[in-house]
Length: 140
Image 1 (cartoon, one colour):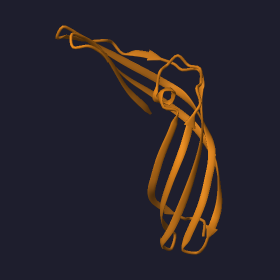
Image 2: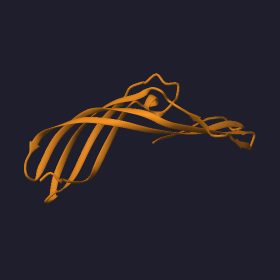
Image 3: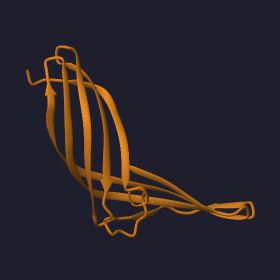
Image 4: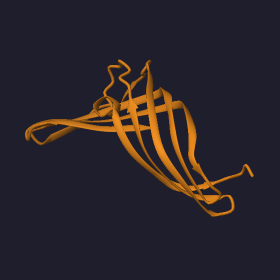
C-alpha cells in the first residue's frame, strides 16, 4: 500500500488530497555471500520488482476563506506496471541455533512507468532503506 498526502494553496484558498494505491508485486533477488562462517555472514543482494496496482482511491478536500468541503472518493486504476531495481549489503549474526540477528542497508530505484497518476515513486525515485530484524533458519 502506497499512501500519499498532497496539498497546495494559500491562506484563503487551499486543497489537500489523500491517495491510496494497493499494489501486488513479484520481487526477485539474488544473494551472494562474501563471508560465510558458522557465526557470521556477510552478503550482497540485488534484484528487481514488478508491481501492479490493483486498486486506487483519492479524496480531495477544499477550503475557501475558512469554509471547508470534502470531496467524494475517486476510484482509479493504473494500467502500467511499476518496475524497480534494488541492491543491499547485509550481515547475519547467529544468536542461537537457527536464529540470526540481521542488518541490511540498501538502495532502490523506481522507474517512471509513464502513468498520469502522481506518487512518491515519481517524485523521489531513488530510495535508501535500512532493514533490521531476526531471521529463523529452517533449512538445517
